[in-house]
Image (tube, rainbow, N blue to C red; front, side):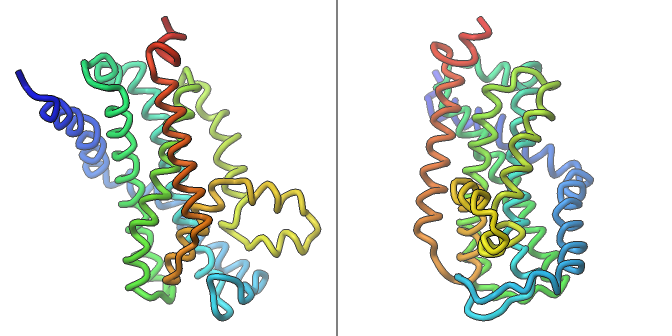
Length: 268
């Protein structure tokens, strides 16, 4: 009889390997995933270069160009959209794809969800690294050593957002409901954060309630964690929020996919 490790290895190959191979066999998918952040990067960095004079705020020790400030936020955008895309993939696979079969396999449900989480994180990280190379080509000044050290932090942020998408897939029962649900998740999380502008700019305009919401937004801490890491600094608060947030989201997803409690039981 094959051991548990063999079963887990087969499930890992089925979930993670399948997602990576699908992505690598579709170069157009990589291009389309980068169109959105590149459009923001090119248009906004040019249009708002003189509007947003980013002051000396942590983690920066001097005034920085707006395009330098934008990069961590756009990296977070890539991870956020890919996490939600993985949620859509999970809904589809659960209804008529491979996950429908895997969820009935004699393996702990938690392992299958971990593998799905790893697949989404790997895809997000790959896209984020490609975007960093493009940012360098556009003349973004960077300390390459700090950027390399930021890769584990980027992976952690991508994992938290993938866990959020996994949790949402519990409650999205049909593909038709996906677009509406995502509009209530992606855009508020992205815009009410520090991805495109520092919070002092929002506070200066008098919108204190927006500042408070942004401070409660887990995506803000993903962006700040990446931003500090790319400057060779460690943001302990952001790290704690991202780590705990990822654990909570995954725990809720695991509960939702528990056949005795969540989605399976509701479906009968």
